Image (tube, rainbow, N blue to C red; front, top):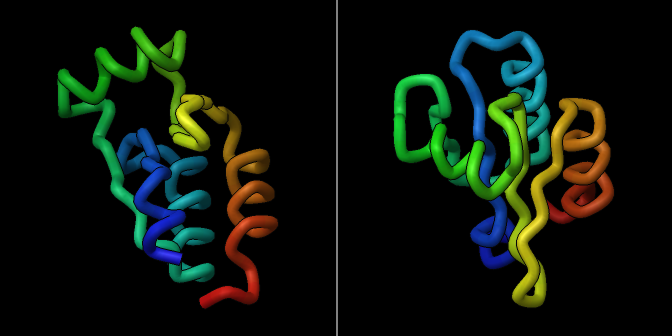
Length: 89
């Protein structure tokens, strides 16, 4: 699981309720993922805008087979994580 999770990172704001919901799902599924504070970290914020296309959180950055994908919306992120990690941990 750690190898797969290493290819994922979550761009989020600490106090955003949708980000809190997403982080709770990460905790429940026990997915060790890098978190980026897109509110206070200017580099993370710029990467979210430049590569993701907009400053909107939460946003899951997925690296798969040399492809980079940016997944927005907490429900979509949680569904992706549950599909990928439920029952693994």
